[in-house]
Image 1 (cartoon, rainbow, N blue to C red):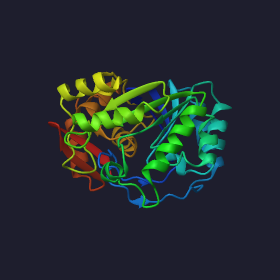
Image 2: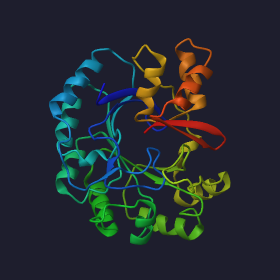
Image 3: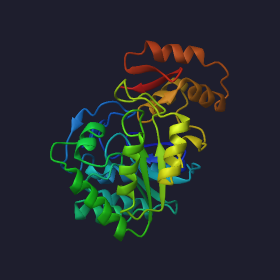
Length: 305
């Protein structure tokens, strides 16, 4: 499958059937914490990267398999609001299933009225907000040169006021970057001006784009939860991975193309397929030049480069 993947586990959404309308690592941010690595194609111009009808046709094929999933999530390998017919894609999905449609976005393009109109059709929208001014915005999210923090924040605020669905904000906290009391207080002030339904506080759990990015301590996360009033994502539990591919190695490659996995997740995934021995497959991953292997937080993590 080129555009549809999963279902994959999501600690916020349950089992998520993914839709990827954006080429790999195409974004208007290059966040220091991105689990997909650095952005290779930095753009801020919306395009129809892939024909809408091709994505919808592939979705029809997958839905015909009667897979078990909780939500259809548009996110994939880049920033989904860069896909110009996003509204039409959401509408087509909603015509084909009664499962909720979620869009995970960095929110950078919400200043564009056409983006707000398209996203308004989704049941859930999950924007990120990690910074409080232009300097922190450039340091953390490393945005496209045409993006201005105040303009981005204004767009998010406009959308949040008008949107009738569920708006779930996410803040990525990193040690020594935005987890100190002053930074948290500044983030709190920004959040107070945005109506939202839920706030999730996250910290890197998979290898980030930059090696010096570190997750926050449990104590600091608890302080952030107390101050910001959010939910710590690392306390949530997710379901397992799924692939329709029969070959175990190809199945794992298909997953890590869009969703990095650590060695324990791969072992659990193989057990669901009746395989008790994971070492041969893990060795093959380490030897595959197309696979990036990172040692992070005491275990190996794999993603397709």
